Amino acid sequence: MRGRKLLMLKNLMITLSRWITGIVFIFSGFVKGVDPMGSAIKFTDYFTAFRLDFMIPLSEELALLLILAEYMVGASLLLGFRIREASWGALLFMIFFLPLTLYLAIFNPVSDCGCFGDALVLTNWETFYKNCIISIPVVMAFLTRKEKPVSIPLWKEALLLAASLALILCVSLYGLTHMPLIDFRPYHIGSNIPEKMKIPEGAPTDEYETILIYEKDGKQQEFTLDNYPWQDSAWTWVETRSVLVSEGYKPLIDDFVVTDRNGNDVTRDILSDPGFVFLLISYDLEKARESSLIRADSLSWHASAGGMRFYGLTASPEMVIESKKEKLGLSYPFLLADETLLKTIVRSNPCLILLKEGTVVNKWCARDIPSKAPGSGLLLAESLNTLRKSGYRWWAFSVFAGLLLFSIFIKILPDKMTGS
Image (tube, rainbow, N blue to C red):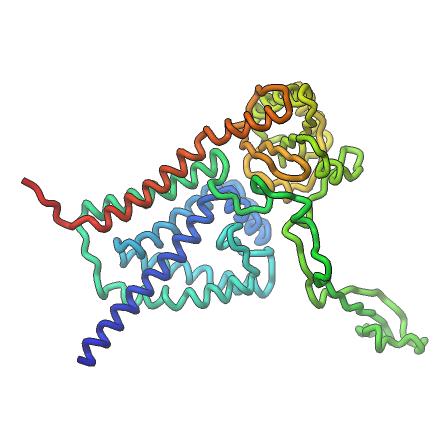
């Protein structure tokens, strides 16, 4: 009797280890797959930090490969096919990422690892602790990979594999070619930028300690404001440093700054405009899709006729802006912002966003930027919003939901189909 209970407990632990590992890997792969360009940007950050610039051109391909690998490992463990291969895959992931995240936590070459994309941003130390915890079910799933085998027919295994692969590919390719199905960033449609820039009253602020460096007899020593040798003329001041002791409250958006080409800050002017403001964002004009820039120029004329403002917003230098305007005959004026900020707001190059009093009313990726619209401000905004909703977004989401249900349906089908 006792042996039977122990066997049941063991089987339960095996099942839980596979399910927990599978769910974590599916979640990690899915949130990255929703926004594959964000994952590619994170790869670029890694390559820059580790001085592997020659790998940067492969960022998108490696991001997609990581997404597919994570999701398929998770789907295999959760749905119960290819358990041995998936267990090896999960273990190899942890063997690589556990020491990597420890290095990131100690030396901080990048601000966050990006393991859960923008859906759940963790500090480097939080990521390392998370990996330590996740390693427990991963190792357990690996050690028991040959026990409690899940026997399913080849046809069902093939269908599960195809459905899982099609599901994550559908989500990822939509994110690459259009907009993320789910936008986890603070600049999503409906977000009010000024509200997300506010610091609540009474919120903690950054605390710094002043360190004074003095020198005596050729040796330097650090002092605080309480004990520095201000009365001892034998000591000579060298420098003063401010060291962050405690980090205060940080708003969701703390770097949204827009300037004109003369360096004047126009952020408040853009965010407080009671009308509609179009911003055609291109973090790199040299690499921007030129057909989209030209379509946007046509749209800018309609916007101006309707009493709305239209700007290009870029991080490119003055010479590139003038060259692109002259080459394509662009008439809309350009403003400037930081490249990292622009890559956070949008993923495609270029991308169009519509603001009203600082609220993101709508966003369009490069291939979806319209060229014509009615002249009336409200009618224009409403018609373009309708255009967005009637596009591929809902189709892609329907395919995703359908494939997920299909995978579950395949799993519960009887192994032997009855026939005549």
